[in-house]
Image (cartoon, rainbow, N blue to C red; front, side, top):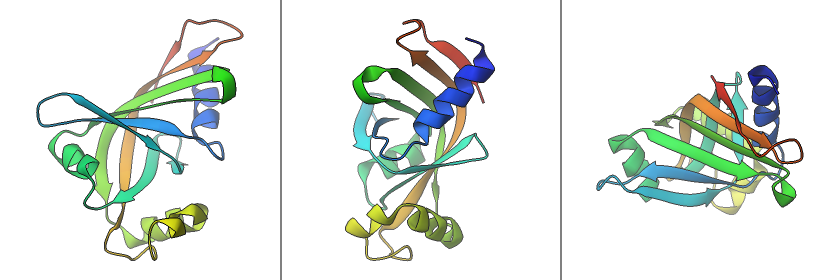
Length: 144
């Protein structure tokens, strides 16, 4: 599979409804810290937004070291995706409102898009891997 096709498939999996992934950050001691994440939005095929609590440990970790990775798969690991990039905390109310509208599940955790504890993680994607296990177990590398 060519990298362009792998990138297209990777973004399709990453942006699919109900996609659950693992977001990894780096703590103060340089150790990876991973946690499950849900709703995400992809912008322009190279920026990912995820919601979080403003006081979450991952926010502090991102502020100190912006290197992050997202890993996930489709059901039964038919397609496996991984992306790496640089993260920042996004405070734009317009972005938060757009994310909120796209992901009604946010209302389960926050009172509204303008709630002080609601913020977004913005990840500028740099590289990724895509594997379709029916075709090969060798991941295809992609760049963003």
